[in-house]
Length: 194
Image (cartoon, rainbow, N blue to C red; front, side, top):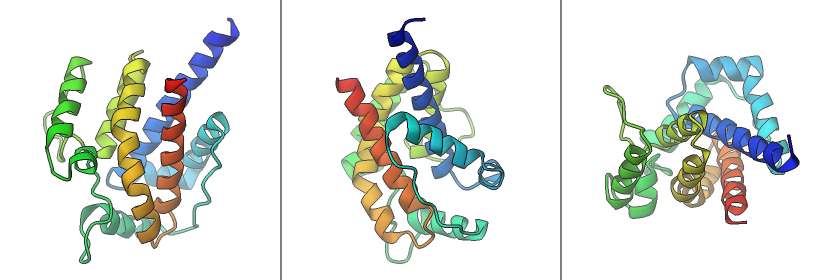
């Protein structure tokens, strides 16, 4: 195998792993995330992405599970002051739910054979759903489409909301991760532009 093919496979694997981490981090905290955090798999995956992209591994506070659940709600779901980071990529671009960016995202995903499954309980442009769609594209060998998805839809969300999450996160979990993913998505976009 030549060096260019090996590098492409490494970049594709890093993109897939990044997208899976984003999906796991921003969906409602669940048993899988809890197990990955407790078992160390989450930390290992972060270290792999950090090594591959040259982005520093985020220093995560040692917080309990309840603190992660509370922070998730306060940052992304409901907050008496206001939600610092609505978890919708279309809202990050348009300041409206299901606006032009969400419509363009839906068309992009349909074009690449990704459909929202029946019973999905959130808007289709939720940052976790978009990342999951990107991971599915990568697993299907459509890393070109996954790269476009990351650069055109996820990076703008992280550029807009990572600073707000950093400022509002009391847990020490979501703030460092949001900044890490913003840096990684910037690196992915930079590599694609090169």
